[in-house]
Image 1 (spheres, one colour):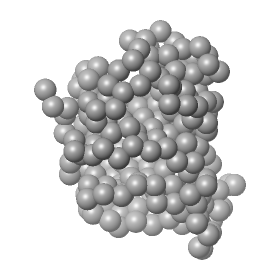
Image 2 (cartoon, one colour; image 1 turned 60 degrees about the horizontal axis):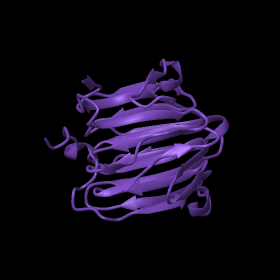
Image 3 (cartoon, helix red, strand yellow; image 1 turned 120 degrees about the horizontal axis):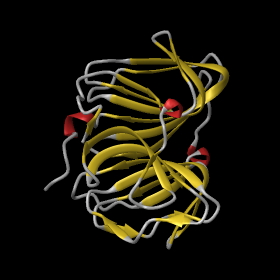
Length: 222
């Protein structure tokens, strides 16, 4: 399966307009944003757990990172409330689920295979002092990518001209990018060579962003 698999193209997905599609596990549904592969895939997805649903125990051979968008995600390592950012690198394993139900934004098979850095962070707690209406937090950085979280006041503009591509998810609020409104849970991917200028509208916006990573995009190892 290939969904938005051409990384040389600009992509915008207003994910809340997509239908929820069933996963192999009862009670777990998803909205696919990009994907290369079948059930084992390099994938970017919004996943919804119904109350009292869970996946079977499994190992993340290619790594997993996710943000909890609503509810409380759970596994044997603890409870992960709204606003938690988690990195589970290759070789880690868990049994994910949710007693009350939750929604997460998750990326699979996008790690350096030698990465063993595992952590969870409260994104709001990581924010620095606002500058020009933008409070930002560096969540993770290595030779392949930079991951950040920003809270923008209304009218503030976030700009980036970094190489290697740009990807963002609007967690809350709304942005204007090239005249287009990106609302809650809209996902944007800009290819190598394109810059970002995103202005927060309304009551402002909260944004997760990753940069520099697209040259490393490829299908999972066989």
